[in-house]
Length: 540
Image (cartoon, rainbow, N blue to C red; front, side):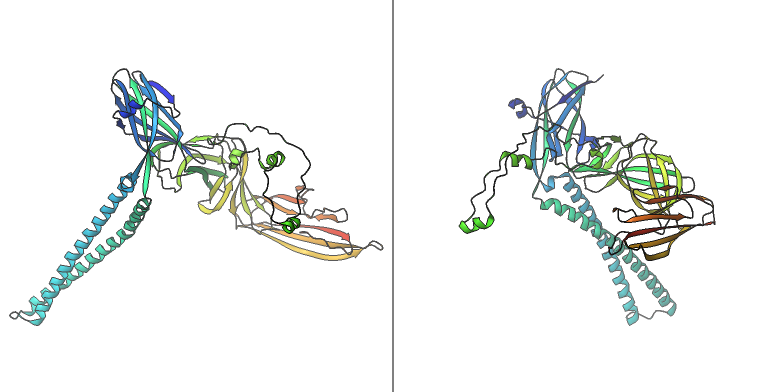
């Protein structure tokens, strides 16, 4: 049974002679990565055979931008081990020593060899074509003894067939050659970018280990590194007939850490490990008379202004906010922190591009209904009311929406904890028609002594369902709301009484069960009156 010896290391010093000894190179690979909103925690694993006594293990090729203070080393072995200390060194490399540059140079050489091969094939074809041209010229001049007509026909038929085959071969070779050119240019650009950056650097971790007997050890190295992040995205597939929604929760992971994460276990976290965990301390808040400031003109008259003195403690307290200035996402502002483990191993190259990883798949069922606000938009939208029945917290992010197999656009998912409900808008539905008309717009006056202006309005909303079955439809409109006691809004009559009237906002809501092929008409009116001689403003 392996004995696990975890060691959390600050950069502790180790006896100098130990590092003067020859080190044992250890090959490590990234096995697990936890990605945060602005950084990542990388776990590397390695195996090493240890002799009796103290050995120095050399983990080379670590990224230059890792946070040295975050390094942790642990070991597992079937014999007692002591990790005596670590040291981290920075090594500067020419671009050609970079593994990435070496890989690009290999790719470039292969592509150039292919191009040379194509050029050789073209040269052979060209020589063959020149041979047949010379043969044709000789036959035309008749330098040899006469050849019968049948032989000439056979020769020219053979000549034509060979020239056609050669032309086709040349075209095929040139097409393949043209495909190589963009790839060669891409590799050259990447290689030039590496070479132009004078020198690259990497970190080498030296771990001093003491073993009482010869044994094998399994080592785990963890460290934090920047230039890594992730964000949420979703694909929502809606069945408008049943209200079933297949919600695919994705993560877009980006990293440019200087290393590739190949076939790693990926964990996504909303925590921010870089934030200072210390509570801010109160400082004295002084009250004093405001110091009189000299008038600018007077300073200009009597000579240049004297140098400004240091601010007093009261002003300094005003200038130093107590709260953190670090940018935070919406999720962190709620005080929530969650982690997700991606089910299958993934590969995230260090190219800075967004790479998608699936977090989970949610099968949700809601009640489909249709909604419209004809005052603002003469369209009807499908809305599905859903509940997050999973254990996953749905973080803010873009949603790619597919309704009945067709892509209908994108929208934004708000933060939705487990057990919370939310509305998913699934786009417009052209099979339901809505039209809003203004029937009356009339101004008049009233009163003998206190004259007042009156504005009468009347509207008509027509709805028609062309779908094959009945639908639930909610219609929204509004009455104006007065913010002045002299301006009075008089609610008129409704052909259909609204389900709700919000007095604070004036919002009107009608809820209908609209059968197929049936036309529904709503009419309502109101009036606004105010003192004559004054003008009113607003969307009434």
